[in-house]
Image (cartoon, rainbow, N blue to C red; front, side, top):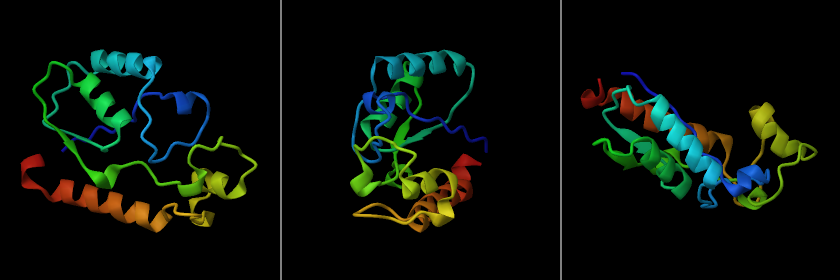
Length: 139
């Protein structure tokens, strides 16, 4: 099995350095253009299936990359973006030590006001990858 992991294209919140997490923000024009360029770069790669988060930015990125190809796109909640709770919509500021820890020292990060724990993130993504790797049709 060969697995390609592609991040969604840019959104207006990415550009403004706002933390979006599970807030369902669509791609902006630059994000769409980069997805189309990625499609061109991957045109000779044979994909059997694509998995995507249910968020519109992830689905649209997958759809643009796989446009005109008969490749199923399957949504899976386990690969959705991290839930940042109260931090969502806020400007990403490096002076927020806890938020900085999420990206640089995850073992020191602690969830706040509805955000997701590191253990939860690891559990759901581990479950997804384990199921994928053990499924005979993807071998």
